[in-house]
Figure 1 (tube, one colour):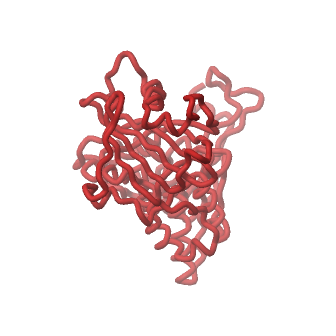
Figure 2 (cartoon, one colour; figure 1 turned 90 degrees about the vertical axis):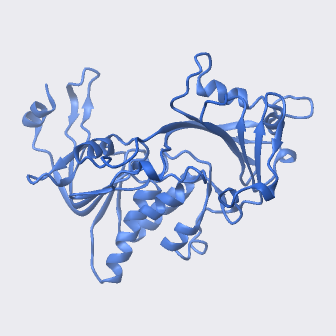
Figure 3 (cartoon, one colour; figure 1 turned 135 degrees about the vertical axis):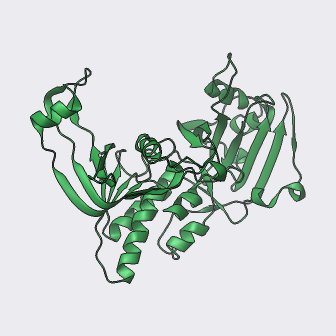
Length: 361
């Protein structure tokens, strides 16, 4: 059965009406929901806002570990400290290191450009920040539907975006309905905001349909691999931010690595590599593991005898939209908008996107 035949047999789909529908409960989507509610309250209006989140809860699909500039959060929620936002570990030191295969050289602090100075920023678990933002949104009356992925963009007769439909449930491996089949639900909005993150499947369709990238440079992408470790307290320096370039990448490959010392003897480490990566012998994941064997990195995970004395707590990977400002598409179209990494607001030179995502929301 085709999707159209399924709807004909089992439909029509139930529909819910909202003023604003938001796809994605990340920093951008939740910030948009909060700001809309704030603006409505200032004018004495009641605006209905719903946020769809494919994960089991807000933050479930957010890869933890980031250096966050708090300026956008301060604009959105000025009293975030009093409200208990999980920004606890201030950056205390920046280390930019160029690695060779056996050694490395740290760039002197005075030689670092202003955008590389992270003082005043925080090392955070972005997943925890998103959970906190979700709580703030719900306090304002935002409805959040976790566990529901938007599968389809809906359009009005005039071609403008009408809303989205969630995916069908109870579908077999062959794509056909089973005895547990349940149709997805339609969510209609006067405005629909897409905040799926990097390379969102609905966002890509919208960019193509409305030719939003007609005057933009081609977008580029990278893969970011992250791990969260608990290390020996003697190897832990709270607030230290270390970035590395060079080995094990060759001079033709875009990317780098990082090691952020958060609170509670935890470190976030990761490896970013452009998707034009061409090494036929090593995958990005294998290169990341090789990077951890470098003497300047291995020390943090081992004891004086070289034995591993750290524990990996979690890990994951995600796409990164790395094209920068020249690759930004037009972000508004009839009935909707793109925000955050859906549009590509990562500030590549600063190695930061969280504050930009919040700002766009």
